[in-house]
Image (cartoon, rainbow, N blue to C red; front, side, top):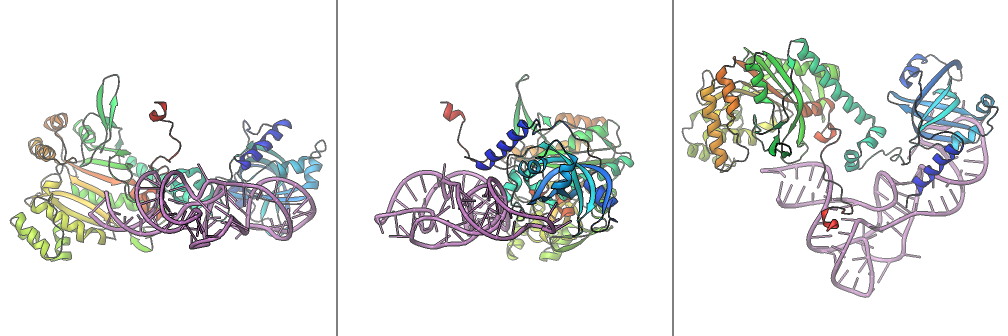
Length: 506
RNA sequence: GGGUCGCUAGCUCAGCGGUAGAGCACUCGGCUUUUAACCGAUUGGUCCUGAGUUCGAAUCUCAGGCGACCCA
């Protein structure tokens, strides 16, 4: 039984009885509140200004004292106070002597209302709209969260994001910054002749990354399909088709665990530039991210969870071998067998997983265990083992490695790029090796995409490719500790409630 | 997958084996310069769910649900 809701419904009915719908069709504001605050900053305390204005927004607080009331009305740009004086409101409505008690008793915090009035700065210095008329725009039937604790329940903040947005300016700011980052990135790419082309989300063969896909089904074709785990293989087909600079900024789906850094659906941008290599992509990466940071944060030195991060280019470049050697003393170039590498790792207390079946995979293990989390300032980690990078070109001078970098910031992988593998025969061998691992039981190993290989045989120019995790970048630029803070509606388990599913139906 | 913590009124929380509590919100009364308005009165509960221990469970135990954080 919800008394609060019933009380508010009674007020909605009372409005209807007075001939006013609790759900208006429209309203025409003359200003946004921030405009008024700015335009009348010069109005002195206690002064009035006879300019007629109309504002609309959500009622946030109400303070009624006898024959005078102060409400706070907030629109998207911020709050403004309403000054509601019984005598002058009644004077404006000679045929409705109840208008003051109507506005004070039929409204609640949370209602959307529109008001007409003039401007007044109160004796206490608060710019206010002195109300001459009001209209209910939308009656709220549910109470707002606690007016000064806000939404402390983290779960509710994610499940009912609309409440979080109403009461948390910081949350609103996070999503504004996210939108600004994305639009800045698109503009930057568009200005440099990169073409955004949408590639399929539904695919019969998910490829382009080591990840498990979501499975779905197309009824009319009776066709099993998966959601994409990357945009890579289709964007490369577009490069084969002659688009020399392409990108796609969009949603990726990976059927994996949930953590403060992982959401099953997330946003990436993949960028491909013909005739470029991974060195070019490093410059592109640091320039692009620094540009976005400047736009979103107003500078390239920012604070993340109490640590100063300097995103001013150029950023540190170091090979994975160098970094691992610096952190562990182990020179992986010197190892000639897995057994030798494994023994050396155990000697310095590194874990040696069964699945890491080569010197290269052990190198990556050592990197993840001892280096990754220490890369706080932006760092390009270069030259990965060929086994882990089936779509990257073999290194021009270092056997067993590929021309690949990953970008780490605050210990998190934030971007990944290659000199792309364009040799169709080498690509076939690499994908077949992946397929072999898959048969051996690795569910994340890639498959052989024959049409992609055919496209490479038609001929792909030398190309640099780059992927950036947008969510992690937004986390960085909004000082957010969890990916859920930067995704408006993160995936959560459905809330437990009375089952009305197939069981109950028998 | 493992560990730790949490779940009590609409919101924020206290209570930790002996009658279910506070502040705010809501309702009513008062109040023409408030902005966490104030003063007074009232109302409001599946203490996450289930089982167990006990004379007695919000409290202890076990299982489950949901979440947060840490680890893999």
